[in-house]
Image (tube, rainbow over all chains, first blue to last red):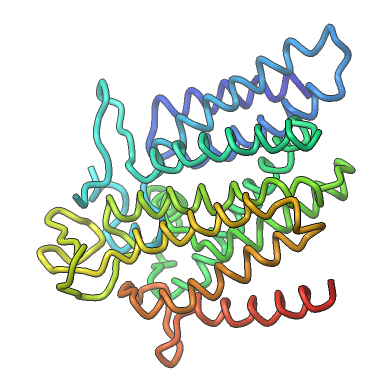
Length: 87
Length: 249
């Protein structure tokens, strides 16, 4: 579970750095990574806690990066004709 | 005022996302203090908030799609950039709340965590994050108010959302302040509100506040039914449910 969290965390970091369009996917993957990382950290034996912690940290960083790319709160985006209109 | 974001080293930062991140940091600091004070397990708190957050986002998106059904062009849904633009923006708070509560329920079911204590002491986090989110709305100009020319009015010049060069009521800031007052109230009386009482009180106060603030909002795109918005209809239902629950506790 820790390894999965680490992979999801790395993917969300990459998405957070590269694409506004894919940020929402990175955000969801990051949150799933945080859940898996925390569950793994809680239940895993001591020797496997390192990977779980790394997965948790990567997922938190990825989630924050993707969250910073999130555009708006309410509606309207489709009214504007897609993201292209914003940039 | 009204711009969506800014750039740091060619990396786009959305104001709304930034205010949410600041809100999350503040909320987590308060939650950390509450968990230490009341002998709760920090890891369990993270699992509850993450699961609640995940389902909350799904719920907020589903309700957004329901209420703005008429504005979405489903013939363009196979266009990847259009689909992603719908996924990127557009959330309805009440959908998030319902989804989040479902997420917390699944947490109790699958991770066997006693969520009652965490809700009692950490429910404060929710209005804090929401309040900061509303500050983000104020900065970018979404969720804007009715035309108004009194004190504290706001005029946007470059907003993608709000009508530009028109004096508007700062409804976002009023809701943010309301959320912070609710957070302060919940933090102060968290010890006295046992079980799910704090959750019901939070939802009840917010629903009453939201019902009246909706009259000052001007973004009817979220759906209107006989001059009553979707959020007001949900507010009435939530007020009735919470009153019943509080009466039975």
